[in-house]
Image 1 (cartoon, rainbow, N blue to C red):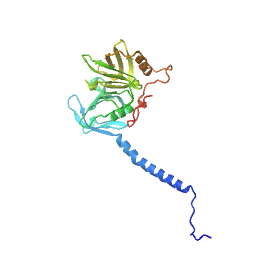
Image 2: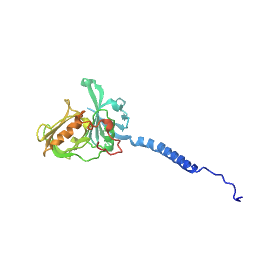
Image 3: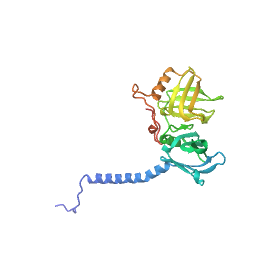
Image 4: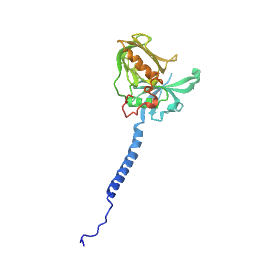
Length: 271
């Protein structure tokens, strides 16, 4: 007989099971720790000036994944908009945001009410713009490029024609978007997913037009007319066509819808 004291024997799998239990508990604790902080990270607060015809007021603009809130001591101006109640979002610049609502303006014969905000502190960064684009139920308009990645299939220097004069920049055609970036006039820059483009045309050799859903004073919607500085390859027209007007003949090509926009913490991956 052995002189060693009797020891309690454990099944061989006991140690592994215990480690798995401890790991599961640690992961659960991390989830409870990080999820609330992720929600907080998706909340963006800005001190703003709400512009009126006669006298502006100030308050706090709060952008979350569920709503956009404006809080102010001027109670009649306070609002909380679920995204479905916003007809159009327009990021005019990194410090200016326009919200077109469904509210009627009685003094303007029922015209939709527009709230214009100017940021007093901070900026509408690309990640904030990506959040707005992801949550907007109607095609937004933005001069600030959201978080995105990828290489353009076609790129050409252009002049964006205005009623008087114009500005110069770069027109880029990607698998999932078209962008116009202007250093002359940054507020004229635009980012369009293909679902944000109502129509497009290449009427002459050195002209390219994009009809958007963006509101235009006097209506109906804004058209971006570009003067091309170089020849646009012939296949670029077909490349854009199958994405703006997808059909059964091109089952693998379809426009990027608002729900397809990537989370703000991930890069945009072309289809």
